[in-house]
Image (tube, rainbow, N blue to C red; front, side):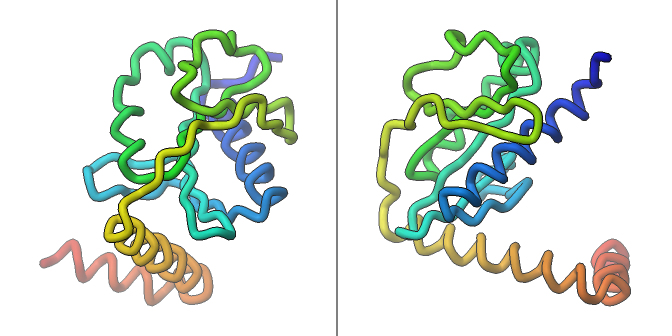
Length: 155
């Protein structure tokens, strides 16, 4: 049975997030970046470095998306995550590669390192922590979050 592209994207993202946790990386889904882009996964490593993981649900998704180089300025390592049916030779050598099979994922190729400048790392760490805390608070108090969203829409 063939799954839809959104279901495939979700399955790859979940498997990649699970791999992050195996490495003791703290993954956060759908992270808005200061340049207007949104990272599929941004993970904070134990050493304070950031890993950006761009999830690709298929060949068309990969070929039509030219935004991924814009993520590099907000991470120490950039990876693509694809499923095991994706032709991995299409992934550029300038990025790492994670391959998902079902609920599991494996790092097939390490990403080349490119260290963030200290000021950008500090700002990104603050953004990451604030977003994570806000999402946790929303889980604990959904009514407060709904009223805040309503107030922001009316302004």
